[in-house]
Amino acid sequence: RKVRGAVIGAGVGGCSLAYWLREAYGEDLELSVYSDRQVGGRCRPVSLEGAQYEAGAAIISELNLHFVSFMKKFGLAQRCPKDFVYEPIGIYDGRGFVLRSPDPARMWLR
Image (cartoon, rainbow, N blue to C red; front, side, top):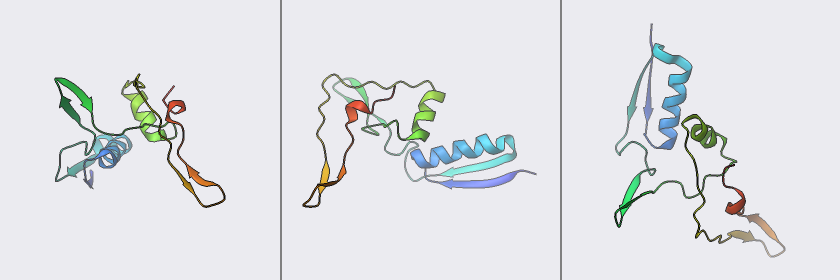
């Protein structure tokens, strides 16, 4: 008897869940994925002046273990753009920074 399931949304979260469910249940899963937009959500290529660019995640941190594991599993590589400029963001409470963005130049996947 097959397990039946549905995933609502086909962005990175919905696609990840569908993948993990398939890995867990294999052919014993009857899975439907529903989305009112294209598969991949905000992660999609765009064309600009004859070149293709990924318009999804701006920074992929090594702290995002799920995304890192997908990149390794599917043989995807990440490159730091040569003209990359780091512009820090932080929240200052009057005494010190309570939140500071990590330096992306140190966060590129190894």
